[in-house]
Image 1 (cartoon, one colour):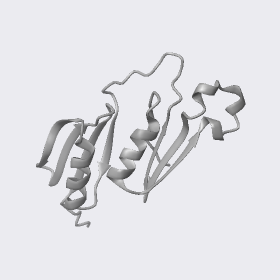
Image 2 (cartoon, one colour):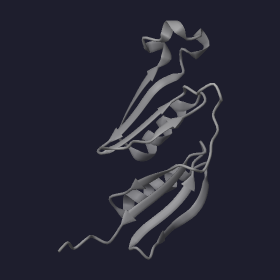
Image 3 (cartoon, helix red, strand yellow):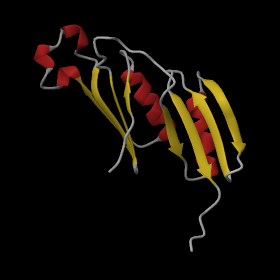
Image 4 (spheres, helix red, strand yellow):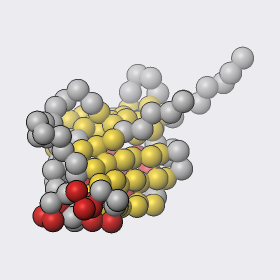
Length: 140
C-alpha cells in the first residue's frame, strides 16, 4: 500500500505544479478539463482548468487538480507534505527553491534524531517538512 498527496488549487494548479516540478525535478503530466471525456459537461470557462496533474520522480508521486468542490477551497494547517531527501545538497536546494515567495517556519538545522530538518509554507499556502536523515541504521 502507498499514500500519495493530492493537492487542490483554485485555478492555479498548472502554475503551482510547474513550480514544484522546477523545485523537485521529475516528470510532470497535465490534463485539462477540455482534454478530458467530461469536457462537454463543463462550462467553457473551465476548459483550461487542470483536471489531473501528476508529478513523478522515483517513488515520489504528487497529484493535484483545479476541481474545487461546491464549498470552495479552504487552506488549513492539518496536512503537511513530508519530503525525505537523499542528500544534504538535495535538501538545501529543494528547501530554498520551495521557500521562494513563501514563509520559513523552521530553518534547516541539525536535529537530535541525527537529521537535517526544516519546514516552510510555500507561496501557494502548502506546508512542507523536509528531512535528510544523516544516521544510517546499523541493523542487527
